[in-house]
Image 1 (cartoon, rainbow, N blue to C red):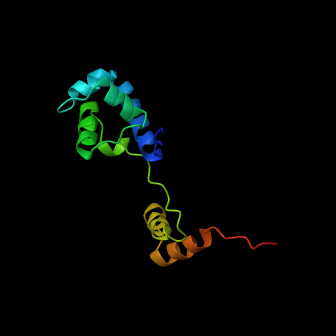
Image 2: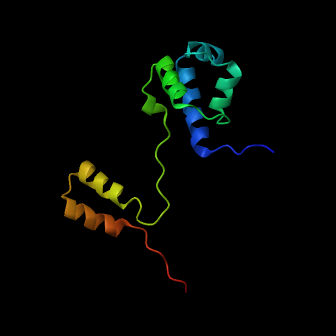
Image 3: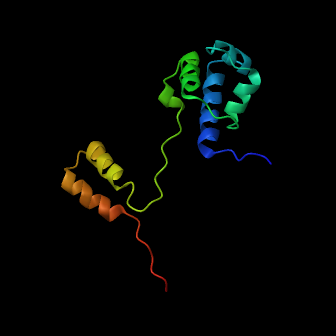
Length: 119
């Protein structure tokens, strides 16, 4: 039975592959640059999202590609639970727009999606 590819690892792998190509490295060359080395097949599996990446390997890959590790990470997805991201929105409004906290909270509450009642 084939394993399901998790969206996080698919996106992480895509970003690693893009950075590797920008660095003009082959999968084999990237694998050789890593401490302990990885095979071309292992790099291909990482890039396709089929193989999870240990934190140390992830950091080694970023170092080998000469890119900041955070640039390879997928963007954080919103938490699907109601109100779970309210604090993040408020913080973004304060930081991004320079709004006072009370005004940012009021605006965030107005921006929350409203549920429709059944008609």
